[in-house]
Amino acid sequence: MKIAIGSDHAAFELKERLVGYLLKKGIEVINCGAYSIESTDYPDYAKKVSEKVVSKECDFGILLCGTGIGMSIAANKIKGIRAALCMFPDMALYARKHNDANVLVLAGRLMGVELAEWTVDAFLSTDFEGGRHERRVKKIEELEE
Ligand code: RB5
Image (cartoon, rainbow, N blue to C red; front, side, top):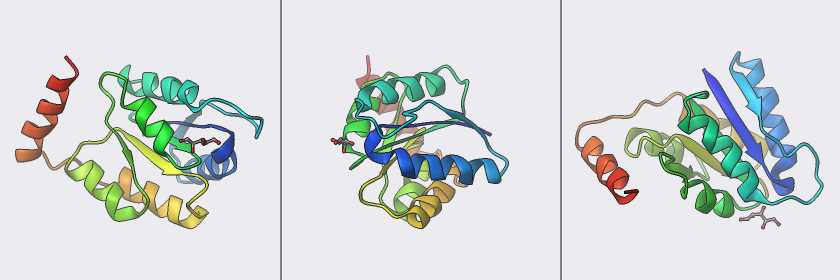
């Protein structure tokens, strides 16, 4: 599995912790920045990570900003992206099961490291259920046209 991850300055530290966590699990990671706590603009990282998911260079994306809200808004502007802001593991589980989310968004200023790790685990270990949810995801795709 290959993951693209990115954050702005507000979530830089949590993002770096998650990079280490994923690598330790044997997951390939492309760290799209930010690379320091210097002030940056979250849409730049939403774009970088989302492009790697849409092009299928990566299986999933993980995006973090202070609240996760800006990253969600930005990433969901990109065709083919279903970004889900998840504050705890069950949200991530259903984001995969029901919504086939391909980008997990986390709130760097509102989540502790362990909660973020558990939420990532739930996201990466859950498959899309398909069935009636397939029809709904197709309708989302139609909204992009
Ligand atoms: C940056 O201060 C902050 O606005 C950003 O990280 C994010 O929370 C936006 O939604």
